[in-house]
Length: 111
Image (cartoon, helix red, strand yellow):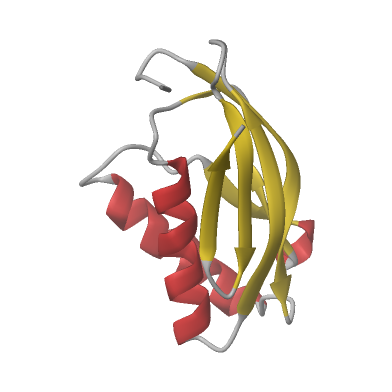
């Protein structure tokens, strides 16, 4: 189980289709900052000129990294975008590894 002190590393990215318009990218960033005031920091960021979602550097996280991807997808879907792809994750303890897949639904598989 990943706890609040676990360092989590991610490889891969989620794809945003079509690429975010600049104004939508700013609106999404603002939306996430507002949510972060009531919760934990979002472990994800938009990169690739609005075409991908990647993990932030040096994440110390709990199990909510998949919940944040669901929040991002909800916002994207409401604004006419689609999220797809998969990201592998690995924590520092045995069993803290798996894959987050997004293709119209979120699937978290622990390995």
